[in-house]
Length: 262
Image (cartoon, rainbow, N blue to C red; front, side, top):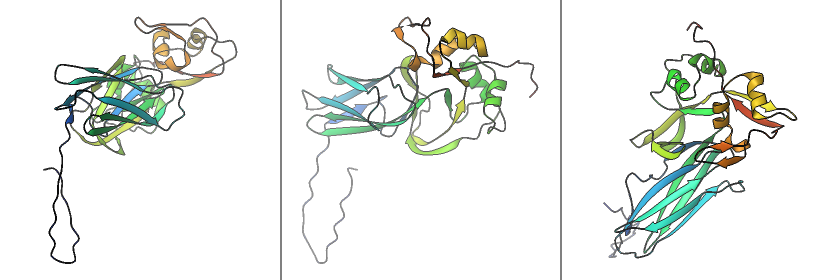
């Protein structure tokens, strides 16, 4: 159960094989290798990890992200417990895209986890079983609005997901906390659904100016554009809406009439 050894020998040989079992293990519900984390750009994600070690009295933790050169990078903190270590991976990504986050725990043995982080701007990652009706309710809009914004979707009742080539589980990060969206490990499929209009803020315009111009709600606009706003406080959320944010693309979520026919 620990692996296999293949010997390509041209004649009868005698050899010995030794192995060692790592004393460092990650305890559920810690993320598994290859798991996908979905978070909005500008929003914080916090991933708790429990590490159990049978012999190590101390443990080192390191984290890296690729591609490099981002305006923010993930951090990891580590605290000893009674019979385990508690780690917290934290990151507020400020650029949209797909990123690889590698965490290494180094005790008597080393254990590494590769996590995929999908950072979305003005999109929702729709997974198996979700419909446009459910997604619309998450963003205080209507399925009609999403249907118009996504002409590639043929039916709001059944959305065909695309394969990603990834294998693992899907976690959704909202308001700083990450929770499992799919419990079982497997091939990860889904579809990026646009949830709003991308509007360029002109010279001298503030966020309320843009909302008044194109519609939508101020609260939802703030939620979708945290990367472009000056955050004064996270809890409770307080942002600066008085200063102009000209020449910035904003995501504005707006609804259509519920009376539109299907």
